[in-house]
Length: 206
Length: 206
DNA sequence: CAATTGCGGCACTGGATAGTGCCGTATTAG
DNA sequence: CTAATACGGCACTATCCAGTGCCGCAATTG
Image 1 (cartoon, each protein chain N blue to C red):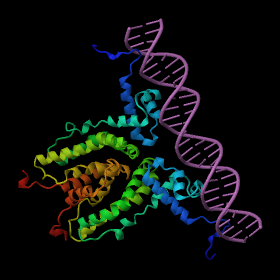
Image 2: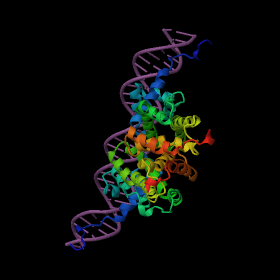
Image 3: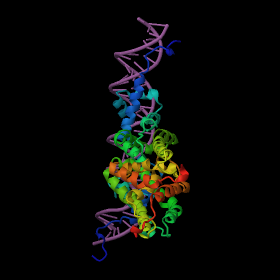
Image 4: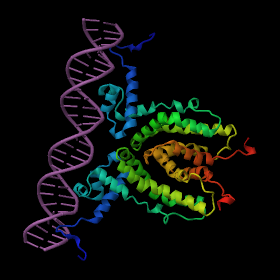
């Protein structure tokens, strides 16, 4: 039992790269069209795979999509991927440029497409929460908390609510208003809402 | 040509109440299931009508849904339907109880269901914006502006952004997190975000 | 080599639903 | 009354798509 690829089973091995390519293709299609329009056919074609190869790995369409959501890349939202510029405002600004048109916009599109699934399957709520919603909120919570810790602002009484402002308003604008989440809009949120709601620290806060 | 119900045409008249019942049934179904699951069959059954009666009035499913969205009742969000309690905070609170489980929650469900349609038809964006998104924002904008006018707060530099905070965060929580938009959550937004972002008026503001 | 499993492609079944046609009935103008 | 239109119900077609079976080929074990 040195390597033992799959015990002593005969036969061709499953290509691990196929798994990744199929999941990525699923996310691609999800980011482009709606949940209802995501067909296995489309995903298979995009991944350069046959439909059987998909059904061999996942029970059905829902399982596939849940698996795809779970592997959404949110590494850029971890503490190590976040900017540390010295002030909260410039941290927010640093998140805008490289990040928005990259990871976050894609995540938003996926979130939008999956919303139809969310109303049906509780499992989808968990998957989306873990992979998309919570990482986003956590990132902003982290940035704000750090600014507070360094004495830039007083501890806000409702940190969780504050951390959800930017994800919520960006999502609302992108989906329901179908308007660009551009710099002008983000600056209005950052300056007019989030930073405005924070207070200078008093002596007692240090 | 005194009354002339429909010129001199013979034949049975279209029942104007049918129009209303069908549109209401469409909104009901839309509030309960997803856009993709809204079938003409279901709407017809709910309205006590035949499918033909629907197709006689609207081109197809999309036209029906667009028409239904356009007649969503947002009267409670007009200046006359909004509370006027003397302070902005109690105005917000007054909106919560009678309104939330009534009009606003229904509007939210409809908004959610239609999101799938939004990504496909630009016309749906217009309809939703006019009937749901804009009235909500306008209501909060009105309340805030009135509070500013009466000298309760200084004029905020980003009023539009501030007016969108509550609708955005409520929608985000209801859809993507599938959590109750309850009093605790609303209070956190009101006190921790919106009111916190407003400032006491200075002498120059009066 | 033989057996076994992965894989892509094709064809097929089954279910759901949009949209249409037809029929019998109800309503209304002339 | 007669013609024309609205209406509900039923049946029908067309389409789309999930899921499955089969075929031929590729890879891997023994």
